[in-house]
Image (cartoon, rainbow, N blue to C red):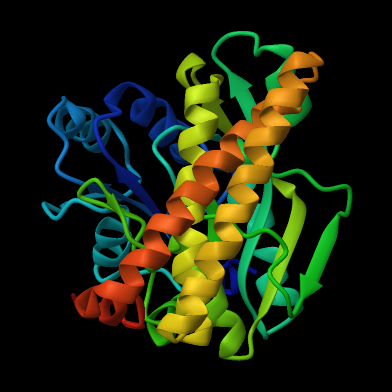
Length: 326
């Protein structure tokens, strides 16, 4: 029945990607979903390109409601959380500005919510849309979460544990989103603070809700050549280091003594990975690329944990739960 169809707000944060945003919007306009049951919200995070013109163009020619919100504060959590406040749907669907949705994405991703009332957030497959053929080492080592890709063999998973829900393909119940305090910060004005959707998912789990993966809900992630490089992999793992230190401190509230012990452990792991880089490179083993990226990971964990020992304001920032009322 039409009245049983879930209303959905598609929220697309964007920053200076007008070209790919145009493709993303079009893919969501063409959903096989009742047009009166969903809306699109473009959350512009202070773009300096022609993003606003692209949105205006689609607003003029589409009968589907397309809203625009400008968020001047730099940080994707600001745009995600601000957009939620103007969203009308019973379910919020979050994605990014470099994605191409399968026409059945919405129709499929709402199904887990109807199968189990405790499901609070759901995801599906995220497959690559390579802008050019990737190097062999990318296919062998990085065709996974490191490029925000996600593929599983199971048709459906409903679990009390996070089954790989990522913010480029994440549906979440409206009431649970607000109850959880919204997305945690990530890269904020050039400084990587926290754990983004990882933190949101931890809060959802702590509230006693379930997670879902449904294979039939599919989206494609546009992967440009700039992400098929060692430099990008190093940066990706460096950011993960910040994320993991944030998550760990938030959960355990380490004393300074405990933090110093963790820093020592990170130093040992950094040295170990440096040695692996050397020997793997000499022996011409591709694994050296992963070890090199983990050098960046542990370097950032050392810096982050050391800052926690010295900066009271930083510790208070990490322990904050509600990012909706910033």
